Amino acid sequence: NKGRDHEQGRDRGGRNRDRNQRQDRNRDRDRDTYRNDHDTKRNDHDRQSKSPHATTPQHWLVPHIRVRIISRKIPNATQNYRQTATVMDIAHRGTATLRVDHSGQVLERIPERYLETALPQQSSGSAYVMLLRGEHCGGQGRMLERNIDRNVGVVQLLEDMAVVTVSLDDIAEWCGDVD
Image 1 (cartoon, rainbow, N blue to C red):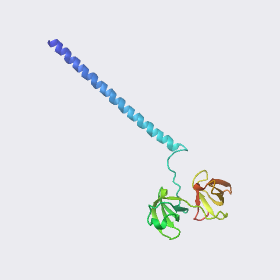
Image 2: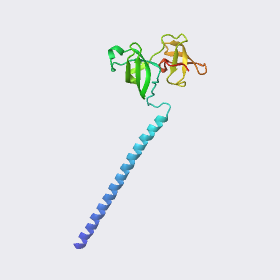
Image 3: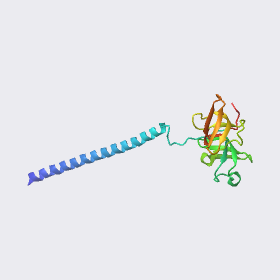
């Protein structure tokens, strides 16, 4: 009897030891799986941010361009809705300080999503624009013509006098000094 109890105790201890080892292996496997999943997600995010087709938002707001207020969620919305304004300063990426053209009122911390680009009234060749996206981003030029139906404008760049066709969404009237 004593020998059998002693053997069962050893077996019970062996079973406990085996169970503990299995639990440790499962815990390690789960931890490794979590880390691998997390690393994969992080690497996917890194790959996306380096990709030219990344889904991260591109901020287009820059000082000295004309914009149109397209939201009623701003101060004095009844007066300022659909009005044009000049960007005076960028507080942090995606928010701007504006001066409303018709009233001179200054609006602070207006989110980019509440604004759209505004184009010059006429494309007489004397209207200056800034290119906000694309290959010539940051360049200035004269707007030669625009085609509302095709949503494109023809711009002569000031830097090298090249003539480019760009989307009207990617340009805005330039209100600052011309370089």
